[in-house]
Length: 343
Image 1 (spheres, helix red, strand yellow):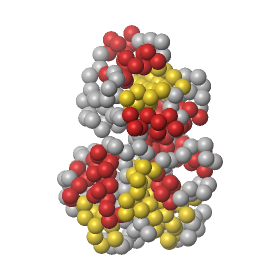
Image 2 (tube, rainbow, N blue to C red; image 1 turned 120 degrees about the vertical axis):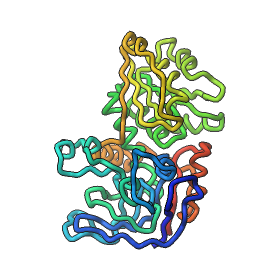
Image 3 (cartoon, rainbow, N blue to C red; image 1 turned 90 degrees about the vertical axis):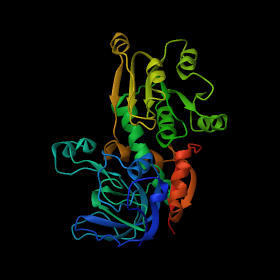
Image 4 (cartoon, helix red, strand yellow; image 1 turned 90 degrees about the horizontal axis):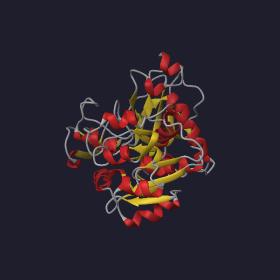
């Protein structure tokens, strides 16, 4: 099969489009012929090399996959060859207390397809049968690849961890990001007032089109000051953050008393400053979030199939142009998801 591979960690030039052996599925696995694979910042970190994601090389990235079932293992039930499917990117052991309780993202062996094993930057990928689901509604392969990771992440942050309520104010950082554009839609659907941020004026209309009530251009406005103005100095009930030190202080300062900040990423670095006196005196809650459970993904997928949530695709690239796709991702001019396509 053809695949995009890196043999050593480093810059985007390490990516090579080459032939690789097609994977051989096990008795509880499914072989999927990949039709589309969406990019995530995780792909960049893995390619650069991260101690959090040790892996044998060469490696094939790609966590968000949609395609057609090519083969099923001898012990697989409920999956049909030829079926159009998307892949749940998170893999638990399926046997521990957390997995049985429906909290598979808390499993001690939890990992991501495309990080713990070869992913979807290839013509074929093998995955556990329990991670394959029918594509909802009339979604294209590209749309089906664009929603799983960001949808399960946004749902887990907004509802499981932040417990977002009808009528609350929520600040969602980075409207154009995968998590951002999906979280805006979810929060609006739940009846919240949605504030969000963009880095350029051309993204303001796009943010409002997906449901934002107020849009702050962080390149020329101080986010926390603008939030205070828009909330009559009260602050927001919830902040959804995935950027890190570049915005951390402003995010914390944007919270109302009793506010909840949920963070799932660190794209601008890992170290932040925090005044604990501010945290306890204002009775703030800060929670870390990593992915979400399959049940949360299925809830989001149902709404996507009904057309109540919409995965946005900024641009597609053929698989052979994965290097250019990753460079485009790093450039931060996109709004929505970037997707690799395979004929």
